[in-house]
Image 1 (spheres, helix red, strand yellow):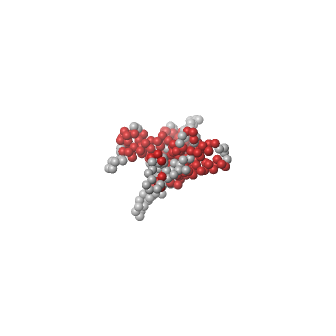
Image 2 (cartoon, rainbow, N blue to C red; image 1 turned 60 degrees about the vertical axis):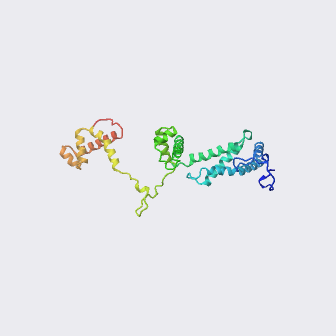
Image 3 (cartoon, rainbow, N blue to C red; image 1 turned 90 degrees about the horizontal axis):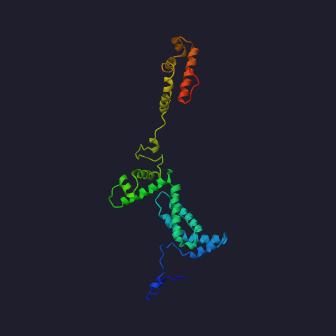
Length: 280
């Protein structure tokens, strides 16, 4: 049983050899015997009870690690749950013959929390390498501006500090803006005529489709015989009726109708990338 020497009677000197060993953290309990016992037990009620006892004992440490990641867009309670999951994984995988549990648990829990941010918290999914560039750029910017009054570092300054290329730094800076998104309903103006981000977005312009169709049909129109081009021009640009076109050209209205249908079909097929089988 450990004795708290800090409450010994006044006047009783405490020797150096009797002083208790100081752990690195107050939330690192001595559970070596429990881990040895856990490793010896088979799956069952007793083993589950020992496992639960270990989780309870080390949970404060998991919460401390979770606290390192506060103010990054995730609630502390959610971070604690993720850290607790990492703790359970560490307990299940730990081999007491390999050393101290804390040395194994800290990186395991930290990795679980970082994985949570990497997989769940990015509003826009970016490749892992870009996420790593983001982290290096973020740390470099913090280091370069740690002195009061330091200006915002340039891309070249960050590149020189990190050993990255300016292109890689630019990718990391873009990723910094991808971690969270702005709602389309976000107000961009605080006056009476306030408007949201969605109000600044343009609508689809149908005229673009007309331009695309016109350019696609140009080549097919050029390849038509002159008489058929003339008929299409008279019908669709001068808005002449088929009977009037027939009178001017000295052909029947039915012939005009067939020429218009055949010419339009040929131009349409060429615009769509198909080949016609015959010639007019």
